[in-house]
Length: 368
Ligand SMILES: *Cc1c(COP(=O)(O)O)cnc(C)c1O
Image 1 (cartoon, rainbow, N blue to C red):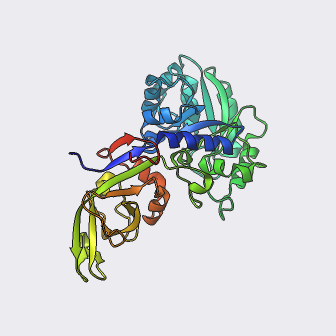
Image 2: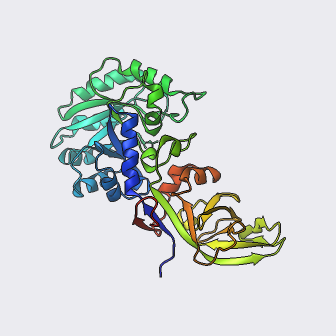
Image 3: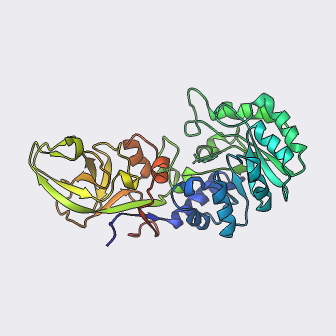
């Protein structure tokens, strides 16, 4: 018998969330973002779950080639672009579009012949200060790209730093959009600005924000970039992590639990031991009080998460036994809520799901 820990991926929720993205940004085409093994969901599964997306965007060139092997014939975009000239011919050969964010990449495109022309996303740094050309350098980069024979089209692109908060005190979407407009001016080409935050707030931002292509990631996996809950936006969980109680301890007042003896029982109580630990991707930083569901009832973590196990308070579930079902996140327990309790974000929990966790597929609401 394998350990009773497994992650169930809900392809039906992935389809549903994609249609929510379409509803938010009805006039845009959608790049479903599938980097990092589709945020831990598996590339091949994402290809099926997002079959109706207009394209798939990611950062790993080997995964892009794998998508072609798997039969994905619609557009593919490399969000960080390529890293050396030797990578370029493959992009032409497999019709993979690429971001271009620095002058070094333009030079490589200038001296490397491709087998076939490719579409380029020219990235502008509008305040995130990670990748991209500054607005005053942008038109020159554009003209230089335009002169390259193997560049078929140029789409203007930028990325939001604070798309989850409309009124961020340091840098708002509105400021970034204004900066983008200044830099890209009337240059010909399509535009791509919004990540999940931008898509979810498209209605409020309609005046300022128009996209030919949007690039949602986390919302397609039933999370939000921050602030409001996924359910408020009609998004559904796409990954449920489940395990079982594998041991029970009845302890007396004053006894402690786990490494570091961090939890002390305030009275006699039952402790459940659950087969899931930080080597499975559950965050070790999750403190006492982080929510878990046992046999459908919410309770909390107690003590420290260890490598293969964690301990939970069974007080609200008097009938709990070895074999009781545990939900760690997903169906019935938003991943963002668990992440928040652990001081991180849903993105990190999904991406950190460890290879040793068995993955299955099942509809949301089924037992997986
Ligand atoms: C990861 C990424 C996205 C998706 O971001 P979410 O917050 O997950 O929606 C969009 N655009 C770029 C350039 C990215 O790297």
